[in-house]
Length: 396
Image (cartoon, rainbow, N blue to C red; front, side, top):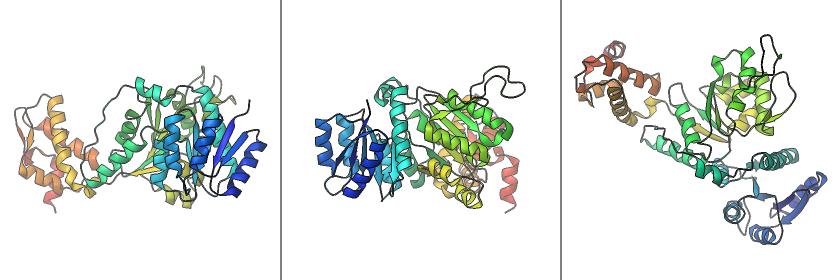
């Protein structure tokens, strides 16, 4: 039996074009000119997919999505708009839309989104609500109370329990993997695996196997089948760090996984479905890489449905005392030290340092200071700080 797609748009021409295009693919279609008519049709007829505009005069698409989620939780929803904004896309994903497409709509893209969503419903029938009830909650701390960090943490809360891809950018040491872990732990995938891969640390010749796996005999030394990181992360989250360093061949394969939600092991043409939420990170300027022709534009736009940029530590100095307090307490407890406070003089020196290595460098400095200070020292003093840090400050 063919699936039924309900198309909601206040423009008659768009309804007609989308309806005709989907009918050619064998779908049964219904159309509505607004949210109220759409809700009435949903009460009268079974629908598998809802494709709705966002900006409509009688009821906007996000309000329609909210009502649909309450009454028809299993309905597949695809949102579309000519006024695409990140907040609208984030809200649509948070409310359960499978994708957010911008007008003018490409028919092939819509076909692919609907096909993948229907296929996923057959392959992975477990609902998000079921996962949410089963998921144990963990807690990853991201220390900071600056306005920028508060805004970032709000975005994390809003997008965590969605399927949308997230691109995290920022200098090395700013905490990109921490944000990725928070996205995983606050989602309905928290009971599934969190798999992290540093793309720059794996040679190009091995990265394909590392990500997608290989079958026996695919290369010299492949004596057994090997699963890749996508399969290992099935049901959970895959974090691809340093995504800007992946070579062109892997970019093509990664784009296909995002579009088709299936992988092929090296040496095999048999597709394997994967239910993976992808989070990527980089310290490179991907827009510049796109312009230079070293990174695919279509992959870039697919990755950055939601973009989170982590500022360097020097741009959020008000968070430095909080971080110092946290790391002193952490490493004193781990190493059985008495230290529990920081002297004003030491704090002043730590605040004056530019921290080119960001939070990672600060953490290493505090760990070194706590461990090398006398075990019974209750207070972190300037003389306990790493010599390199003191030399750098004294030379200014």
